[in-house]
Image 1 (cartoon, rainbow, N blue to C red):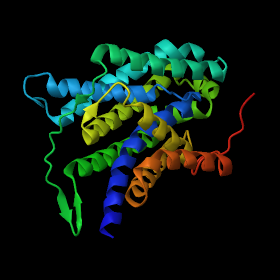
Image 2: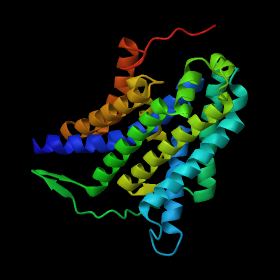
Image 3: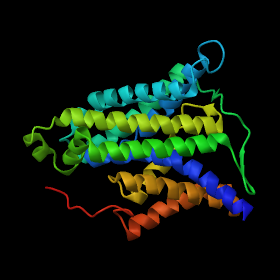
Image 4: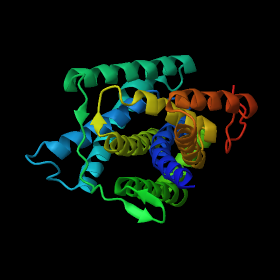
Length: 296
């Protein structure tokens, strides 16, 4: 029982990270029908931004961790908007394959840019959170895990309220349903798409910071596998559906954790990618997704 509870806690921790990254995928797809494969690299740059501000002022964390996280999120949001303007905005009416190839190219470009700027040697990400765990019954929960889960839940609630209760959130939903109709209603579609990229990139950066804190390192290729798994989470939950991305992230995190605890860590990736195949075979729209006919 103790092992099971520990794996559940680990699964919630990993699931929180995947959910944050998956939301970026699903928001961008929901609004412009693009799989932004550069999203994992935005997550990676978010971790590097946090690392730089955490270590560049003499002693480690001269700036409080929460401020470091917010700075990383803002810089990643700006980066996401710039990528959308430079690489994707001209391709909105182009064939899907053109946008997909551009996204893959942008991913490789950002990886190599990080290699050039930061080098190939991983950086050690300092963790300012005390290592003393919280004891609940037989289970010890690291404070970093508690912090990650609580921050993730907070930002997910914030995003849900923003999308459902604000004017900008309603504009995002309108553009995702019908861009032309939204434009006729006076909604600035370009600004709405930029805002979507900004929010998705900021949450991806938050996931990157938590990932780097959990694994205590930052590297130019760190976004590849978490990005792929977050994409699987988005598809699993129903790509284009924010709640589905959250659910998919936690499911993938739990599956990973329980596989490591009760079987072997060698088979984790195979199990996760096998789940993707199964969901695509039996419910291609995902758990919370809806089958929508393409406009032609």
